[in-house]
Structure formats: structure tokens, C-alpha cells
Image (cartoon, rainbow, N blue to C red; front, side, top):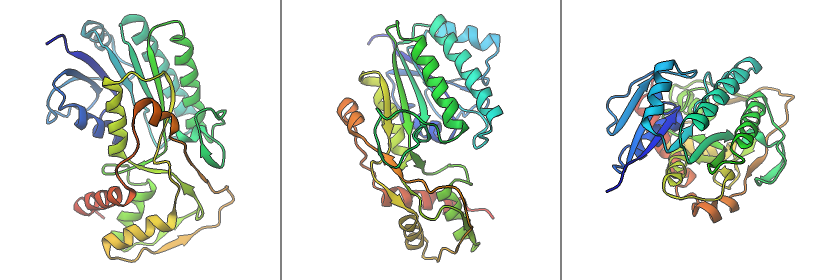
Length: 300
């Protein structure tokens, strides 16, 4: 057996990162290295660097010695703080870190998570649509994409930018739509919403982990990839699924809101052709698993 490929992950203890980590920690043919302030010792086959971006000198020296092959940059500190100040801070520390990796290691793959908010359109979104950021988060994600793309343009590094749509599942932050609906329904509280007519693309976090894992052993064409269900789901379908599984009524109050309703979803043709992936976990199956998690961990 040859040398194990070294996989370095930032943001591995976040919502998406932790699910991904559980998937790949079982792979014995890779050495998994995680940068995190929190050492999750219960996860096997993982080497932990206890630090956070921007990294200290000792951590940077250690990374040089580890001879990293693949970088997954999932970190973005302070979510859901999408202020200009916080997004600019994340942009700068991400640029510095990835510049360091390009200059001081021999990485051959960089995988970074972007956001569907990089689109500002109605209907189905394909990767060739010109980016028009919906908010600060998307604006600074686009700047990060452009920076990395310019840095590796003359290199042999494969660079993958994943535009994630509306991801949900266990361990998601409690103020996100689906956990908010579930927890308030469990506790018999009224739910206050602003955008009644949103029509969006929801995908299980387990599917995202599967996509991320595929980049370990496949080498598709570099570029931007949509990661979504490819389907549009309205609020009524989500509410009905929660009511059915909890056998409780969801009480919603809609506030007047001047912002426009969001109505967009992913075109998956590129990722299907290049990565041989299409979602297999249905919305109903994913929402059932999510509800089960929040019922088990429900606290007022």
C-alpha cells in the first residue's frame, strides 16, 4: 500500500463539516487533519490541530511538515453574522490561509464552499449565470473565489467551488428556518415569518457530505458546481411535513415584509455529468431524520 493521501479540513466542526468528517473518518486510505479550536476526540482516524484562522506560527510549521494533498476550506467564522465587517474579516483570513497553502505545500486539490446567494435571479440557476450577490456573505464569497482562481490559474491545482443551496439536517443552527419551525412547534410556540412565498431548493446535509467525499477519489473538471436538490420547495410543503411527523399544528404569523420573495433553485446538469452525482435522499426522508434529531434534543 502506498503513502496515505493527507486531507486538511477547516470548518470541520461546523454543521456541514462535522457531517462530512463522520463520513470520511472511516476511510483508512486517507490521513485526515482538522484545524479546530475544539478537539472532538471521539472521532477516530483524525489528527487535530487545535487552532483557528488566522493560524499561529506553530500550526503553520506543522502543516508544512504534513505534506497535505487535498484542502477542504469550509470555515467561515461568525455565521449568521453577515455584516460587511465580519465578511471582510473572513475574506482576508481565508485569502491569507489559502495563499500560504499554495506557496508552502504541494496540494493538488482545493475544495471551497460558496453559497447559492451568489445568484440573484428567479428560476433555475446554472453555473454560467453571471454572479450577482444577494448579500454581504455572497459578495465576499465571490471575492474569495476570484482570488483563488487567479492564484492557481498557472498551476496544476484542481479548484472546485461548491455553491451550496439551502442545506438542512441535524445540528443546524437553531435560528435556521427548518430547526426554528420544528423547535417552536414542539414547544407550542407561535412562529413568526416574513417571506411567505419563498420557493427554494432544500438539500439534506448528508448529500453534501457525499458530494464532498466524491472529490477525494474523483478528479472532475475544475470550476463552479451547484450542490442542491434541483427541486423547488415552498413553505407549505415544509410545514405539512413537520405537522405530519410531529402530529402537531404549526402556528405561523406572517409579518409584513417589503423585501422580495426568493424563488430560485439549482440546475444540476454540470455536477451530474462531471461528478456522477444526483441526490438520492428525498426531502421527506431528510426532514424525518431532522425532526427525530430535534425531538431527541429538544430544550425550551
